[in-house]
Length: 367
Image (cartoon, rainbow, N blue to C red):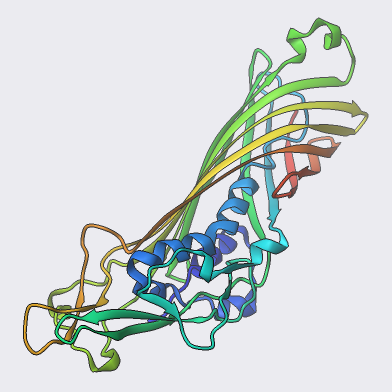
């Protein structure tokens, strides 16, 4: 019954070709359990996934360029880059007691209130108990238990993205990113696309227009990443409670969906010295991440319409049990270099910000 937010992270990692073998083996844990928290599930999931949502967004916003020069008309560059965004130490855990949960969901006796985020340790989080009030006895009764999800055991978000850039004239360059829908291990799939525009500012500034090898450009880009993981959370006979609705319920459409929309704007200056180009500038990075559990899910509830009282599983076809959004923005200082040998180039860069990023890539082209 257990599945995890970790499945989304694995789907993204698979797309990059980066694998964490021990963690992958235990990836499918805990998301089904969080569904039991019902109205409180979004609070727990949002806090758990927030560090990765922010880091992935800022990772997507790096690696767009490798110089402050826009390609001339008809020239092109084809590259693949890998990038990571680093989380901080405080991103590894969160305090359950500070999440504003309703009284119906509480820590099990003796359990600590500190739980791992997606960037936390690989040990399962503290046990939680869901309670409900029996309308016939007016007594509080236990409806279910679950553990908060384990972490990845790492505090960074890695990505690898292919990109094509083409000069279209007028000191303007267009960049396109695309990763078709790829399925992994039958459970996960991921796809990505993005578009960027670079425009030369040097041509509009006479003071620097005549400086050889020195360039200044403005850049703006948008990237859309979607990953999904199939879930399997069937009705069960927990605590001898009767699943009265499972005979006509379809639970085969369960899916965990992760979407990040990231956009960035930069001003870049560069100086070319032979085969080496040094570049740097300011970067604004903004991202929105949504994580949702879509489909039908069986949840334990108290039935009040019949005697004697018993418990049932119900389906909410209107609202998904988990649907959270994470937004973040930051301004950073960016610097990097490119080594160009004929049609082949390699480059590396870093951005100093709240979520620092680092990127490296290889490319071929006529630029």
